[in-house]
Length: 199
Image (cartoon, rainbow, N blue to C red; front, side):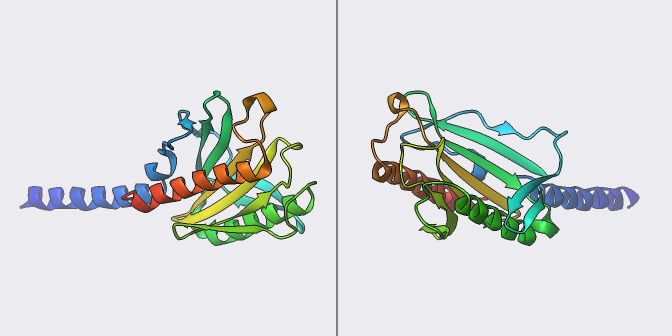
């Protein structure tokens, strides 16, 4: 009888630990994505020794957001150069709402204090039911970054999309309109992948 009780207790404890772990880890759905026209590099995980928070700028000064785990994945074009820099970060569960607000304020700050931006307000995109917020340059002739976007799919996760500007010899786009088509193709494919992913 004692053996049965002990086994039952171990089983309950194991289930509890597994459910706790799943809430505090980034699902593979967010980091394992292979688009048709780009080559995904190996995901790089944030070192365990990294700070569990970081500071960002807003119009109200510097604020702190939590970051208890994270990954970076580069997506290279057919010339072997990264066109998309994707970052996935996990917030402390209790800080997720505040982190979302501060991250949007940071994107607004970047938009207001950068040159040659497409709009004064944040751009809002919608792909497969996911809202994506960000900023965009109005030219491919300046800046190392053409667009910066962020998405909040839930579960404490924030996803950043950085679309790199490239030297003419490494580009696969010839104009800002062409870049936007490639941007939208990536966001459409990535969000469709999330929609189908079991987690």
